Every structure is written in structure tokens, then in C-alpha cells.
Length: 431
Ligand code: ACO
View: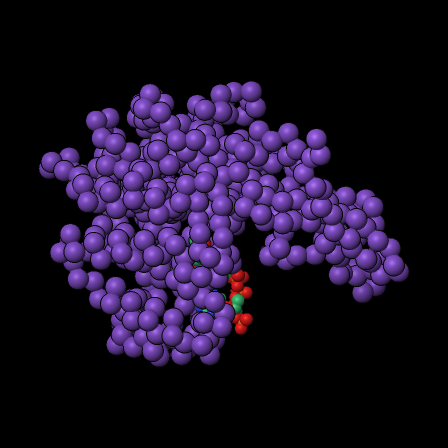
């Protein structure tokens, strides 16, 4: 029986030299020219700053169609998962490639509950950070420190499942503890009777002197927020996790690398930047139109934070869900946030403006998420930590996929050198 047709692409180089390159086709009919043999065969490399057109791997985790605004984890639509699933189930799905059975789900949840504490000695680390520390600095340092407390992670034959469970559970505790430290309150330990998201809210907002009941609406909202952030294929932080992990560095080191890459305002730091931008507009009288004009004129290199995306050239499906959630959560809490009104008016102005239309700039996941976190009582400098908590299962899934792939090679791009040619060293007295 004949196999599937093998496609190839032909590249003609200066001087008429030709290279025939295999074409790889994905399950959703995405096409790639496989250039792995190019340099050996022709001496040429490809140049693609920012990896705008470079596929760094094949992957079966997440499908994203930026033109049509489609996002699916392991084949399930983000809309269905956000509506019907919860964060623990989605984490299992991303990491293991399938939805869990009842028994698998129960044992995964029990494992996460059992591993929620961090070593008591690690509490001293929190005390060592100055009160002005950004929680992302604390989070990344603490995650790296986990590898010191679990030195078996340095052994490549140690249990991957155990490290995965530990990191998923402990990052939640570390995130909540960093917040408690930053406001000078005693640490609240995890409570085993609570589910993952409820337990996080408990560690964040309970105080020893009072009972704290987790609101089911906030628990649901947090589950949805974390699900929406859980994976986004080969973005900057996920590619960093893969890059660090490709050297054989342990899972904690690779995740810490991802956390640091996420921190920047062009990536996960955008949710904080959005709120700062909205606050600035409010402080100067709430004139959204003027701010949009400044953005269009590139005044001080301004950007409309929370707008635009490297891959989405349509409305980010996550932003659609978040916009609706914003109204629901604020109504439940009885909050009227003027920043939400400013955000909505900016969106309306931008979506009708030629500058944004022609560049295909739409709200991304960060445009509305900060307003919901703010309403939940989460401070602005914790927003990117919340993003990291949500993205964790995605990073883990990609790290696992990479280490299990026998074709994985250490990540090592090439470059085109544009510096000086060989020149003679001149001793300092003769210069
Ligand atoms: N506001 C105004 N103009 C924008 C914006 C924006 N938010 N985003 C892109 N542009 C303009 C650029 O100025 C550029 O214009 P030019 O062609 O006249 O020079 C054009 O659109 C293309 O922009 P690039 O920066 O080349 O696009 P790229 O794909 O590299 O950037 C990015 C994507 C970084 C997300 C960008 O849209 C941006 O900076 N957005 C604001 C920050 C943000 O919200 N980041 C979160 C992204 S989602 C996430 O990581 C979770």
C-alpha cells in the first residue's frame, strides 16, 4: 500500500545551487519546510530574528490558529474547558495528553494535596528579601531553591511524576507565601480539605484571627483564569523552558527560567502594565482618546498594553471569555471599577481605528485579566505571579514532551557575524 505523499520544497541559492527540503505537515494541515539539513548540504543557515517564522519543534500539546482566533489544548476548545473543567483537570490533560478518569483525577488531586508544604527552612528565605522585592523575583528564586531541597531532581533517572507534582503544588504555596510576607502577615498554611484554587485563595486571604470562607464565584473565576493561561504553545517563556531544559538542566531550573522570561512587560508582565496604563489615564482625567492618539503617534514609544499579539491577528479567544467574566465577577462582588469603564472605552476606540485595524491589533489575554484580579483583592505586582501559576502546567507539559522526545537536541541557534574581521592586537602603550 502506498504511504502518504512525501512533500518537498526546492530552494535555489545564489550561483544556482539547489536544495530539496522535506515538508512537514501537522494534523491541522500546518506546513513547514524542514531546514535541518540545509547547512550541511549548502553551507547556508536561515535568519529569523524573534523566530517569527521558525518552528522550534513539533508538539502535540496545544493548537493555536491566530488568524481565526482558535485555541485548543490536546484537541479540546478553550471555551469548553473554561466553561466545564477546572484547573487541576486541565493540568492533568496538558501534562498527560488525556482527560483523567475519576480514579486518575482523585489520585492526582491527592498527590497535589500531599505535596503542598514547602520545607520549613525555606521560610527563612522569604524573610531575607527586602519588602520592596517584586514577587516575581521571589518566586523565581524560590523555585530554583526547590532543586536544592530535592537534589534527586539532578538525577535524570529520578521520578519525573514526583517532581511534576511537587512543583505544581509548591509553586501555589510559594506564590501565596510571598504575598503574605510582602504585607507583613503571618503565613497561612495550606488546608488539605480545600481544592487547588480554593486552597490558594485561603492561603492568600485568610488570617489566623478570623474564619475565611472561599467564595464559590471567586473559586470558579480563578479556575477559569488559570485555565485560560495554562498553555499557549511556543511563546517566549515556554520556549525558554524548553531551551533551559534542552541542556539537561533539572525541571525546577527550567521552570525558573520560564518564570523569568514571563516577567517582561511584552509577555506576562503586560497584565501589570495594563493596570498601570489604565491608572495613568484615570489620573490624567480619563481621556482614553488622547492616550490612543499618543499610542498611534508612538509618543515616548507608547503601546496600548494588553493589545496585539505575535500570533493572534484576530480577537484573542481568551480575552473574549475574560471580558464576560469581568462583568460577572465585578457584579458578584458589587464593585464598580472605573478602570473597567476606561478599558472598555479604549477597546471600543481602538477596534474602530484604522491604526489598530490595519495592524490587526486586538485585546489579548492580559487586557481584562488584571481588572478581575484587582477585584479579587490580588495586588497589581502579583498579577504576573498569577500568570506563572496558570502557565505552570503548560511549561511542565512542554518540558516533559521535550525530555521524552528522542530527537531532542540542545537548543543552539546559529548567527550571522557582522563584527570586525581579524585584526592585530595592539599593546595599550601603542594605542
Ligand atoms: N500598541 C500599539 N502599537 C502596537 C502594539 C500595541 N499594543 N503592538 C504592536 N504594535 C505595532 C508596532 O508598533 C508595530 O508598528 P510598526 O509596523 O508601525 O512599527 C506593529 O504593530 C507590529 O508590532 P511588533 O512589535 O513588530 O509585533 P510583535 O509581533 O513583535 O509584538 C507584542 C507582539 C509584543 C505582543 C506587541 O503587540 C506588544 O508589544 N503588545 C503590548 C504588550 C502586550 O500586551 N503583551 C502581552 C502579549 S500576550 C502574552 O504574552 C501573554
